[in-house]
Length: 92
Image (tube, rainbow, N blue to C red):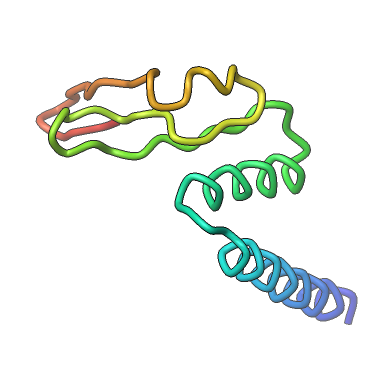
C-alpha cells in the first residue's frame, strides 16, 4: 500500500514538473531564454548550485555552453568542450 502511495506521489510530481516545463517553454521568447529558465528549473529541483546546458555545434564539432547557473554568464557562447574518443565511440 505504501509503495502505491509513493508511486502516485511520483506520478503527480512528474505531471506537475511537466506542466512547469511547458509553462517555461510557452513563456520564453527565444531559445536562449528557454534554456536559461530550464537551467534554473533543474538546479532548483536538484538542489544544485551549478547547472549548465551545452549544445552541439555541428560545424565546429564542439559542445558550446548555451545556459548556466553557477558559472559566469559571460562564458555563454564562449566556453566549449571538444570530443573525446573511447573505443571507437564518440563521447561528449
